[in-house]
Each structure stands twice: as structure tokens, then as C-alpha cells.
Length: 300
Ligand SMILES: NC(=O)c1ccc[n+]([C@@H]2O[C@H](COP(=O)([O-])OP(=O)(O)OC[C@H]3O[C@@H](n4cnc5c(N)ncnc54)[C@H](OP(=O)(O)O)[C@@H]3O)[C@@H](O)[C@H]2O)c1
Image 1: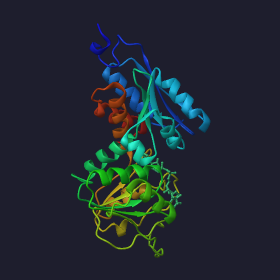
Image 2: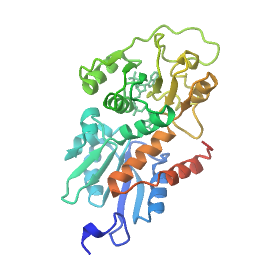
Image 3: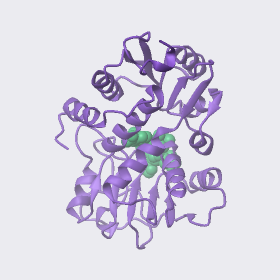
């Protein structure tokens, strides 16, 4: 049979090799997600973890791409973007690549599937979002760039950006948003005395539909909240941070009356989008999510 007639990842193809490249990769859930997907699809493929230094990123991507591809995580998403022969629009807009693969002609291709992952997670939390939504985006790092690009591309009404470092927020808007009038930096106000846990950022009052935490606050057990859950004003809260249980901010936001979700849904969705790029088939997202819940011992 010709190659075109062989289902992607089927037993008649040589086994394919995928891996996550990053600085610290040992606690990643990516192998759990991708192995669950390959098992459910019956694909002859494996997924490993590779801790790499910056200068190794390009050569290792190229070597893997000859047999499959992979994902890239902190702090190498920018270097991965620069190493590509063919970058997707999302990579060009965000300067960040988290998913790569080799084309038949040897081209090293890549995408930023955090964009698609965010859109899935936002839509699951707030149906229709981010279209026509008024959004407060906390953070201006790599994840925030993916969120900003996704929100502008999908018709958000407005995006306010609040980062601890205003110059970084302005730089991100310039590079990702161009001069789109829907985006602006908002100033960090003075912290108020709050009854419970401290908050790191203090947005001005305003009517919002969705607040996205794209800072890394919540990864550490003693971290302050990104913003005071009581100040959400009913807006839905999407935390990109995820862990062995829902983050304290998500639980507090729900108690304050907001719809809320942590980053597990986005993690599963960006991984599913990677499977679609690599194998060209519909990913078994239910099996992937179930595997993530099993691995973390979570029930939602
Ligand atoms: N769920 C998913 O699929 C998914 C995908 C991608 C990322 N993420 C998560 O998103 C988070 C951010 O990732 P990233 O790649 O964007 O990281 P990054 O590029 O290092 O950016 C970190 C962001 O957090 C802010 N920050 C860190 N410590 C802070 C503090 N003490 N107070 C206020 N702001 C603080 C930084 O502010 P400054 O600009 O002031 O430094 C920056 O905006 C991580 O937790 C990551 O795991 C999740």
C-alpha cells in the first residue's frame, strides 16, 4: 500500500518517537496524557522526557522530528520557535512554540497549541468565550502571550493586561497585539487589607466577564492569590496553573460566587491539539483527561 493509505501511527508504520523538552521536566503530566492517547488510538508511538540546555534545543528538536516530534516547555519555548523551518501563525504572533514535528520532506514544523488549549478551556468555562468577552489578563509571560493572541483572534470585546512589571505588559501588547484598540495595560493599584490570604495584584474596579491567571502564582503552596477573589465581581475565573488539586484561588473564586476552573482542562486540550498535529487524527480527549485525573488522584 502507498504511505497515504496507511493510517497515521498504525502498526504498518515504523514506531514514532515523541518527547517533552524543557529545563525541568520530571514532574510533567505530558507523558501520561500522550501515552493514554497513543494507547487509545492503537498508535505505535512512545513519549519520553528530555531535560535539555538552551543550545541543545534546536539540534534535539531536529533529531526527534526525523522520527516524530514533541513538545517544549519552560524555559525553551522561544528557542524552539526560533529553531523552526515552518512556524504557524500562532508561533509567529507569540514568539513561542510548544509543539513540533517533522514533515515528510524533512521540514521542522511547529505550532503553539497553548492557544487552542486556552480557547477550549475558556469556552468550557464560559460558553462562547472569549468572543465578545471583557477579559482581564493577569501576567505577561509566555502563557499570557498565547492567551492574548487567542482572545484577539476570537473576537474578545476588550483585554486589560495587568502584570507586576508594567513594561513587560506593554512589550507583550506591542508584539502580540500590535496597535489593536481593544487591548490596554491597567495599573496595579495599592493593596488593600484583606481578611484572608494576600493578593499579589490589584486591578482597578471594572465590569468583566473573564479573569485569566497567566502568572505562575499558585504553583507554590504559600503563594498569594493573583487577585482577591472577592474583587472578581462575579466574573468567571480561569487559572492556567494546575497541580495535584485545584488551586486555592479557583476554590476561593467559586466560594465567592464565580464560575472557576484551573489549568488542567487547558493542559489536556493543548496536548490533544498536539496529537492532532502529529498524527492527523481526532485525539481521544476523554481518555486523556481520565488519565490526567487518575495520575493526580483528582476527581475533577
Ligand atoms: N494549563 C496549561 O496548559 C498551561 C500552559 C502554559 C502555562 N501554564 C502555566 O501558566 C503559568 C505561567 O507560565 P509562563 O510560561 O507564562 O511563565 P513565565 O513566562 O515565566 O511568566 C510568569 C508570569 O508570572 C508572573 N509572576 C511570577 N511571580 C510573580 C509574583 N510573585 N507576583 C506577580 N506576578 C508574578 C510574571 O510576572 P513578571 O512579568 O513581573 O515577571 C509573569 O507574568 C505557569 O504556572 C504555567 O505552568 C499552564
